[in-house]
Length: 270
Image (tube, rainbow, N blue to C red; front, side, top):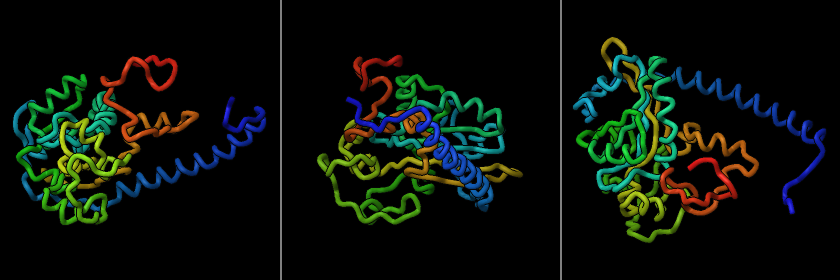
């Protein structure tokens, strides 16, 4: 028996038109926010960062690959991980298709993680990804842009998503379960092949840079739910009848880990 409210086509259309007003307002506000992002002051990068890529070692300026703009996704994959974060992996499933379009709009895209390049490439082959992925293993890059933290910082309380988090007590292998990856979920840490403390010293985010007259400038960064808009799956689920339908601590998996019986009777994706 259906549990949701039902109605006539006329009732649906009236409600839909009301919703359309709200959607249009959200679109206009989103456009205004995009303009405000572009109006942020640029901060010149004076520190030298080194990255390891498939083409060898390079600087932050080298990552632009001839473009004037650079977008970096801070992918949670620390040196002590055995596999990439499941959440970041779900987001990254959408990167293959956008990278070439961004490159042809004067924007170079990279994922950056602290794990060594060989480890990243092994996981990249498993996931069948083709987007550029660089290692910042020997660099302060992730730490300086608030996507990685030391154990000492974790114990004192880190600064993430522009707010101070309280000091973290060692969680070990069995903390309180949480649906939020940064709060210390056992399932996410286990899926990444590490303990919770190590897992949560890496955080997701996006950073934007500009290259002008040979100088690199930091223009924007967002973290935590600030990257929700980049998650293609969320945009579709938010338009599905039951929404995100978040059920359980790890309600999505890596795309090669779903069983033959999906959450529903039939599915065309395997």
